[in-house]
Amino acid sequence: MDLLYKNILFSPIDIPLDNSLTEFANNFQSEFEFANWDVMKLTNDSTNYAVADFKEYLKDSHSDMLDYFYREFPFTEFINVKLHRAKSGKLTRPHSDLVNPAVNPVLTRHLIENEPCGYRMILKGDSSKLYIINSKGNKQYCSFPENCNAFLIRHTDGIHGADADDNRLALFLSGIIDDKKHNRILARSLAKFKNYVIYDEK
Image 1 (cartoon, rainbow, N blue to C red):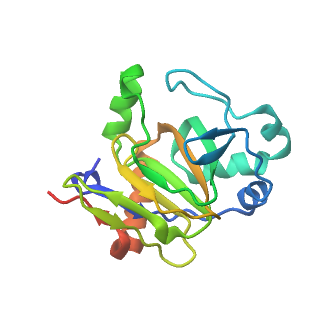
Image 2: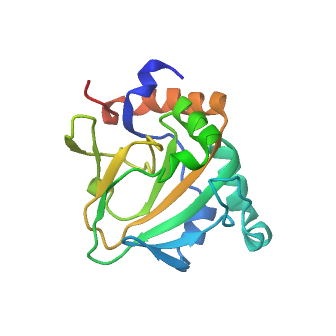
């Protein structure tokens, strides 16, 4: 991974929003609550961040969406794919996404080597409510170019949060990174969206 990439805390990503995902998300059905979110899992449950397959009903009825995930995102296998819907009036407190890195040290090392590798997408809501906190503790709000939904943060240690946004619906993806594809996506995204990228303060 290029050292320049390692210093990125946030970047919009040049990945299009597919109709198959939009249509699926329009029929969001909460399966459980986590913090201030309602959650709908697309992958099966797994332990210790093990690779997980997509749920069987998605293979039958939403294969176009799964093809889109494999085609556009740089994952050879997926671990956790889910939709988060913000609860009314509730903010997302500052946090990082890899909660227990010690339970799978091989995966954690792989993710660190490929940071930033936290692929996310805002499907509904106000993208300007998203913020990151850098290594000096400074808070900075993220901005997105027009017609861009996808973004990238540091998956293992990137502190981020969001102000209350009742309409917010987000896609979360994690998995085993295809480093060559990942680097290609990063390179074209930085070239296209360089004015929106947030780097850490050293």
